[in-house]
Length: 133
Image 1 (cartoon, rainbow, N blue to C red):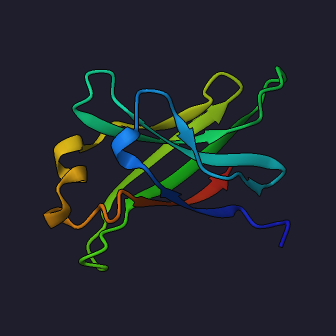
Image 2: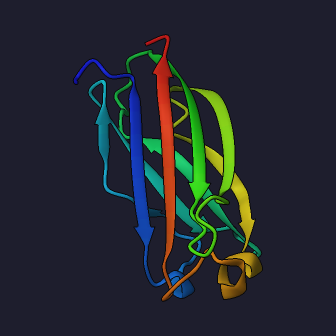
């Protein structure tokens, strides 16, 4: 329903081998009238992948929302063992995204034996809940 405070985004990132320091964005999901999306990028020293939850509410009114989120990189060879990290933060008109610059090392991502990459694709998921709106 429109009253839901929870969101879910699944982001299939293709051509991972060409990923650079520019952000790639998932399709948007709207929760409580605010567009949310996942972004993925290579850290500037190229040693790891960063992942963040981004919001598209950029008007200059003073506002804030508390968000708790669980970010997961799906493991294709071991479905029960994703790489998962949690965070809680307050988003506002100055904090446009939040996540991890060193979510997982590049070596781990591209090593097919680790199970995260298949056919040059990875899948990221985020489950998040808003509060104190």
